[in-house]
Image (cartoon, rainbow, N blue to C red; front, side, top):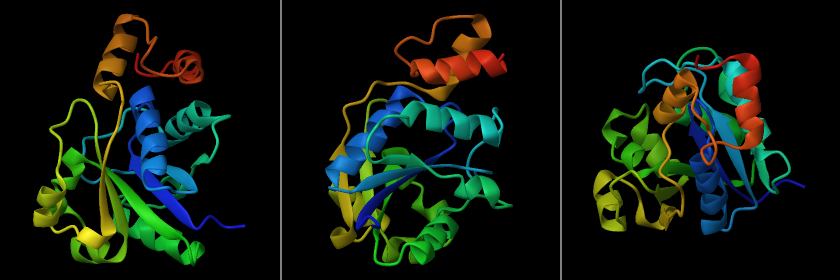
Length: 199
């Protein structure tokens, strides 16, 4: 049976850390979604190049969420050539899951970049959004979101209780041989070690 409401959480996930896990699970619960789908980007258009390869990032996502209910990692963007645009991903998911209400999960910083989005008008008018405020980013309020173009009836702002963790700090720690305790799950740390990532 298909879920009736799904939160879609995209990102580079380079690597997928405990802050990402907190966002995924709390955004899902914040909009009462049946599931959350984690979608690692193939070629992110608005960020610098990813460090770990697609297969490695997908493996880290799947390792981090294993055994956790109502959360899955999809390889949709990793299989599609060219830049990974959110609009293309949402169209693909919508066509394959008719009747499912899709919520796009964005952090405050990403939400403030709507003017740079590919197909922003269509995206903002076609899908629900859950905008998350978490440690390390200036919080966004509902009024600011509306001023940016988000539709009030399609948008919810959710506060996330998450550690202030960055992929940059994790990669720095790996390169200097420091511990990743409290930053990534043990399963993700094992993949980083076994595959020699971020050395």
